[in-house]
Image (cartoon, rainbow, N blue to C red; front, side, top):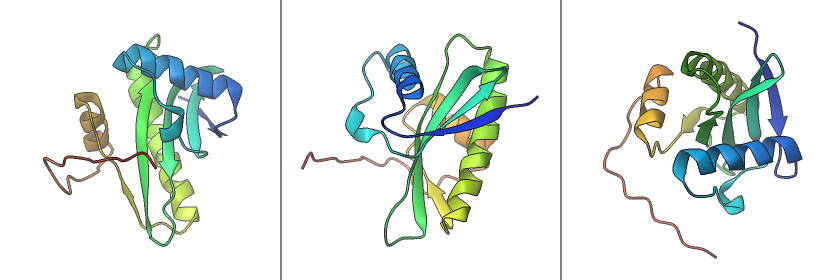
Length: 135
């Protein structure tokens, strides 16, 4: 199964629009522009967009964050799972190339937890309450 990786940023119209639509379909609310990253990655199969994820490089650290995985709801679940495996592996290699040693994520849904478990991410902390403050 041949997938193609496309890296995109906050200004890339087709991918950003798809991510916003897929997130709205998945969560019932929009994915804020403020939480997306200029390091967006999308997997395509036969020119069809399948899944996307964001990488959040952290300055002064050897750990980056991977987050907000979202998939095209019109694509078969098997293709989505294969595509996310491809995509996560590619993002891991990209992060390694930037000299990061760890990737961390905060899985907020059952589907995300299952995805990270399938991709051999270990649980590092549980029952975390994440706080955020707008600056």
